Length: 143
Image 1 (cartoon, rainbow, N blue to C red):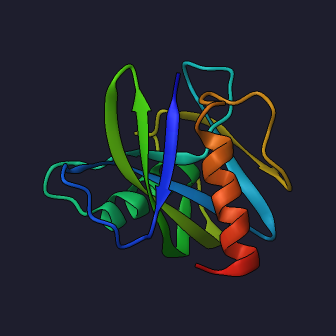
Image 2 (spheres, rainbow, N blue to C red):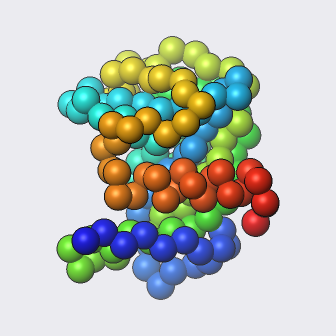
């Protein structure tokens, strides 16, 4: 069983942050990505590299996975995922994308889609809906 918990954006866990996940909008539609090795859809994001902040990772992952060139990023939550007895932490960001370029050649992403809702065929169906719903709540109510 997978357990997702959401915290204040400024919450600092006792362990290092592992992931930055970015719910991104472009021209009022959500951006979702498909990894080259999968047939399922994902919210953009990935691992935080050594010596990189979660914000830096969010910007890098957004650019690498979607081709975003100009964008704003806001941290809207810290989150944890407990799976198989192990808990990892990450930060959830909201991106407003103003300009897209091509997906870089170094990217593991095969394609992106633009939707007004969360796709049904998700890579992580036990995690992504909760993060997406937090984004929707943030847009409606703020923190």
